[in-house]
Image (cartoon, rainbow over all chains, first blue to last red; front, top):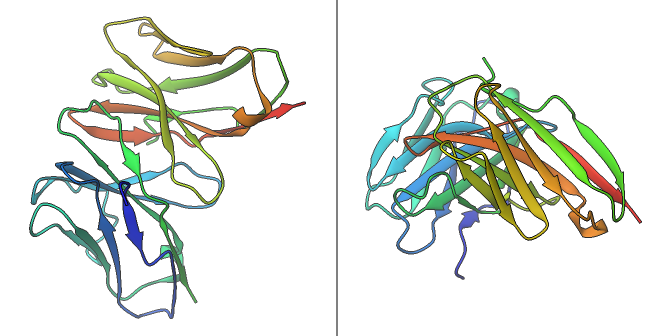
Length: 114
Length: 110
């Protein structure tokens, strides 16, 4: 498809387990963003990439969260030792460089930690 | 510290009337301001933006106003339609980092 693709759309896991969420951006988009959205809240910034490098990772809540984008396209958000408080919708977005904030979002990956 | 604030969690408007959604920000370094619209079970979609050097931008039924001295922006929708019912997020960007507000849920009543 032409849009941002996120997999899985739903993930249920147990406390303490490791989780990977994948994002496939729009072809040609150099910037890629990860956000976390809890119920009734706005998207909370986690990290964004320009190409392969993380341009700003100041939103990652702690060292259990890590994201990579090794070839400048697909990105994976990795969460170690999941906690119940990690339950949220994880949104990925991509954009052209210098797009001044105009992001294209995927439908999100809903993570539930039991 | 919430840099982008939307103090009204919800708003209800009659079809055909004007909807006004408000947003305040704290960081004077933001250079673009944006509005996104979100339907349930979908990702947010870009609606309209404004550069910090302008005070108004219009696109069809949607107009965004920026008051830099007050660090305030608003989105006007005229006339409101039932299909406009959604959650609206205000966002602000600086060097491509985009920060979102908590959202306002708009209901347009037929």
